[in-house]
Length: 261
Image 1 (spheres, rainbow, N blue to C red):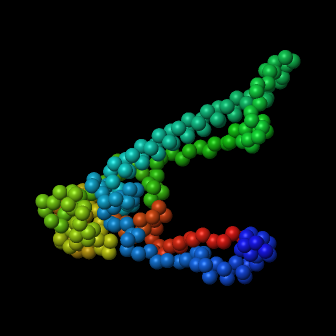
Image 2: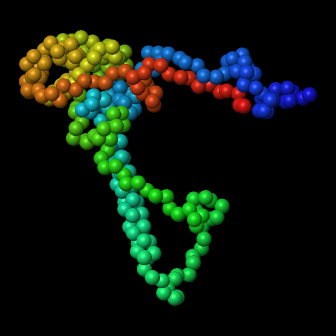
């Protein structure tokens, strides 16, 4: 028997028990791994670019973005919705025209000569296929993280307090995340393990402990002196991984190649 015949794993005689045994012996399969610190997005990083923000803004739900990234995303989605809406309106007008033609009685010699038939070997272009029915696009652009409707006017500028004065933006971003910024009220260092909030009037980032101790009793922004309402204290979202599927779960599955049945 040839070597190919000895190692053949695509036949029906390759049982489930043999497949599992070979998978365990070769190291292939699925493995549950714990997401480490290197895979966690830093608290001052943009949710779109995953890079430290130079001009940060925050949404009412507490998601931090680079201003250029989120504005470009909102404009792109707005133009996309406008294009899809026009295509949906054209299709709806065409369907109405076809329905009116079907309701009108046919007269001899009124039918137009048939045009060239579409490609019969492409399923979507056969005469019986018809055009794909478009759905009416949803109005309003949504936040890429929370999925809620988001307007440009709702973005709040964020001002981080540097841990050391006089540093250039490049020098500041070269530091470790825990050594970059401090609380604007207490001077405590900020990091992924520290719950933070943004005060809307001043845009300053403070710890939640400082909010409970210094802000909520008087409901006033200590830095700007403006009165605060319920939605003026925006808690920054923490956690989430640096992968595309960010979330609160710290466990991930690493899929590896498996032997075909």
